Length: 583
Image 1 (cartoon, helix red, strand yellow):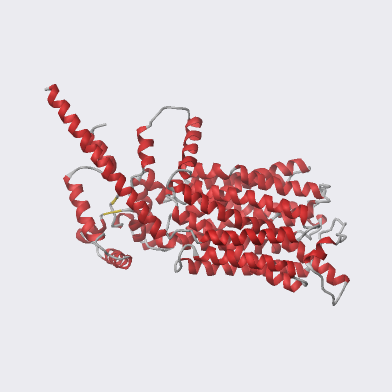
Image 2: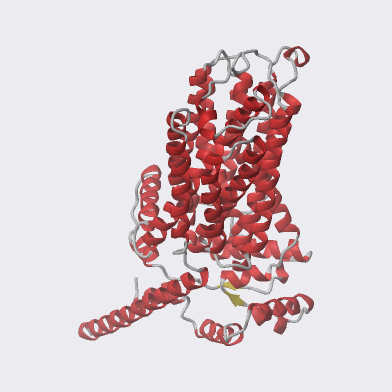
């Protein structure tokens, strides 16, 4: 590699024309102009056809270029497909509470086996947490989503055909293994089609569709599961339920065929390909020809020391071995400075969040049922949570699923409140600092979870459950947006998967604690959740603002670039000296 080539690796082509163009662009677009000014220029470039007008944005970095594509039909189509991905993720995570009790008599399941089916799904998600993030950072977000959704749909249909508990357990494991991709990569995928100021907001609004699944599940259960097998030709209703759940999975996978790869990810690999994607987005949003896109060249956004190491370390190895090596490299990056601090901080906050969200949150319906049964047996009396936890209630032993109208309304109430919370957080995310929404929601969750211990009626439990589930779901989705906002594109996928991995482990630990102690010492798990959430609240104060993080990253990149340029000049002097000696 020649000195000039080394210099080009950092600063681009060395031609005088390009340098002049870049200098002119820097004077025009980067001399203190605001985002509003850039938008006005975008509108101006849309309405004029002469070459001079088009050349205003001839060369831009990705963030400014994606802003010029506007927001229109393409983004609506993108959000619709990602909505199906997240809806499927919510359905897979919540269907166990409805399907397995209905399948209990058909497959002769014991309570322990139903618990193992739930654990199989969670273990599958834990096992794949690192895998999908690393692969998505290496081969692209779209390909991972497409393949996992289609295969998961096949596994769901296979589960509907199982005649034995073991087969269903294997299918649930692979559902959890594959669903982990949609649960994490979708947020990266949808956010990377948006301008910087809209990325966090797009993640929060996307969470609405995940929450919508918790509204759809009780409705589907109410409509499908009570249907007798005789009306379905001898097929059990729970099998039809699983077949219906597989539909959005398959549909989302098929729709992804017609969407491009994330342009932000493509810009890291091939800027020409990214430019073509942005041109197509511009054409679809503006309803014009792709050739009218005013940006003709994407400038390199940054120079990363890891990129230089990878570029200098080119070896020929087997495809599988190379993939595993690159996965380990991606994981190693987020545990090195300066990202290790952010990795530890967000992972711990997610641990606290999901300790309550997937711990106490999954036990609230059981607690509501105990209040209902107590009030039916002892009208006009009240009971504490500790007293209800110690009571043994006889459950329905028939094989006909029963749907309590009050439980149906309760589930819908919690789902609606969570949905509204996601919508409000999406509206606020573009107006508040990154740390505000996680801090407020985690604090409210910690206080409301502690209050649960002193409840003495079903309506009080419902009110607190709505508050708790709303703030926990909002905090969970918002933390995903924080990861997407603060981590570099090349490691954002693996970083998000790491935080979800830590969260799923905490959810399993919390469920284990509730299962062992809820019937004996209910105060211990309830107040442990409250304490964990309040501790997580304190750590939310240390979440940096995206502007500060970007400023620090920019400063580090500038220093690195300057060092490399100096090294390039030194190499050029040495080479020139050697040339003179040879002559």
